[in-house]
Image (cartoon, rainbow, N blue to C red):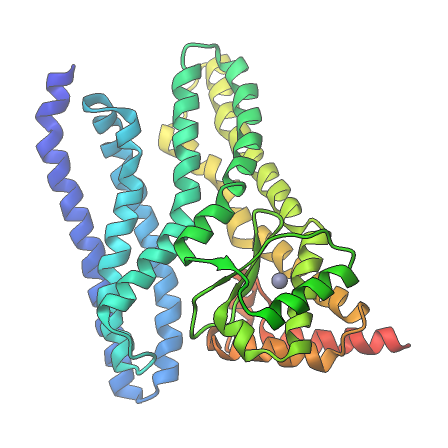
Length: 388
Ligand SMILES: [Zn+2]
């Protein structure tokens, strides 16, 4: 058996290289389409907008090609080397393609004057963003593979339950190491600035919050604050320097609201439901096949199984997250902070990232945050409704 796999290996590797080249060539084509558009219309904003939409399509195509490559390469490598090495395939694929295409797109952005970063900076940024995204999935796939290997000898019914239990544990397990991954990748340290420390301490006391770790990380250009690992707050250096005392307080209260209302737990719970739906579809299909003795093509089975995950990833989770953002803003206003203060703080955060300011209605549907415009409108309306 192994001899057969070894024989087709060169062919499969050649095919993989061809698919990768096609994938990168598509980035180059996209680059040329955008530049042509830019030289014709002369509007860098219009071209950037088009770049953004085509960029989404490009990511989609990359994912499809990744599945194609994984579909024939993973079983093959699993047979020849080991399944635990074979799992690396999709991750390496994404890594190589994203880094390769970010070099190509950096030329596009340079012409559009969106940025003036060097290629090295862009590649680093892309790598860092990818690692944030890939490491948790990577851990999860490894545990899933290990589990599948472990239960491959037990009957299918038992493994469904074990697998379900496992997904639950795993989802929490990937959230637990997140703060450490973030801390490491962002080179974060506990808050250094004395006055910021004092504001955090006072705000926590005011909101009856037990002490939770707050970290700062060296970002000089973006003002960012977020919660990970359920109860850990991260803030960028820039946020701490650029916000006034009461604006910083407003942002801390916003993050406190996320922690106090268990927003991350709720988001994990929703992810769980959709994961279960995916498992049920995949395993359910197999049971139906077995009972009624008909054959569903494996690829179709996988696609149907992933449908709930896609639905969740594209629509449901972003929507829930936007609702949570609103609730956190409401909490800030209810705590007595002036709407103007919150708006000023948000404006400072978002002006460092004009992506969100320019969000279209369609994009907002896919985004985890509402556009600033809608957010300000909502904050003002809510503040008015409180006065009544
Ligand atoms: Zn938030």
